Image 1 (cartoon, rainbow, N blue to C red):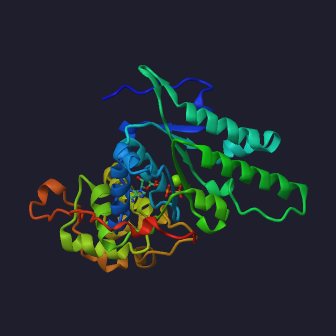
Image 2: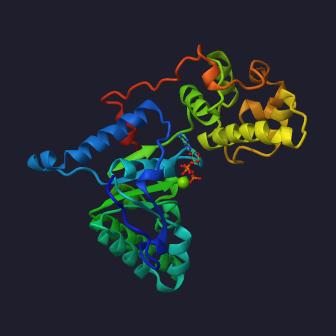
Image 3: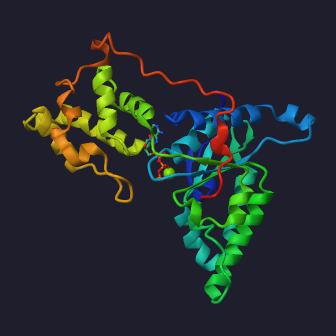
Length: 326
Ligand SMILES: Nc1ncnc2c1ncn2[C@@H]1O[C@H](COP(=O)(O)OP(=O)(O)OP(=O)(O)O)[C@@H](O)[C@H]1O
Ligand SMILES: [Mg+2]
């Protein structure tokens, strides 16, 4: 694998966190979203053929969706597929500098991102990831106060810099409806990441329960009990279950199935703005708990376990890429 840049103090990391390709993991996504992303990647690698017909690959994408659905994970995964490091800009860093120096900070960030990073073999381009872009790009208002005026200028600067930026830019927001419409239009790809459906929840459960596993009927029932849960919450549920399995006996805790489930549900809750999955209402009384084998079997001991397969993305699955601003 190509060697990537080493961190340099005071370098590009002053604006946020650097994510390296080898640390990325692939999020489990719905088929339409996977279709859109596959198409985007193919387009990026077909740059010269596209140039021959007078178009460029799209380079600016915005992901909109509730917390914990994988927006950051997906941006990192895409950067890794391009073989590039990703700079995840922390809006707090930009905003705290912003107060005094206003639009200059945005300009400096984009200049630094466009310059890329020093690698062992020369300059390496980066993917610029602007998380919580709504914090910087809220809708402009008619300026009745100096603060509005300053804020509008910031949005105008961001607008210009996004338009001029030739590198890969990905933005994410939990509040697509609050983004200034002109900023929204500067992104040539809009992807909505929704909460996972039943099939995705099954795959997410299987991934994060590993090395344990559930027979397919129990997996299906548990995925139903986790309806409306974000992938992040499902991950937390699975990881807490594994912690209970290892740590509970050391602490001589009651390891009866229902007691373990109730104990872990008390320390892991859905985001207050999202729906409450059935499991959190019924706890150990949920049918999914009744049918869950206990102790949890290892995947290796479940020879009859059906593989939880991904349905391949189909061409034309990319309807979400044409989404409107919410
Ligand atoms: N679709 C997914 N498939 C597998 N794991 C996921 C998925 N989405 C999120 N996760 C896991 O949940 C955690 C949070 O994900 P991530 O930070 O990417 O979400 P986000 O949408 O960026 O959230 P936020 O809006 O809070 O920034 C990560 O540990 C990630 O591994
Ligand atoms: Mg995120």
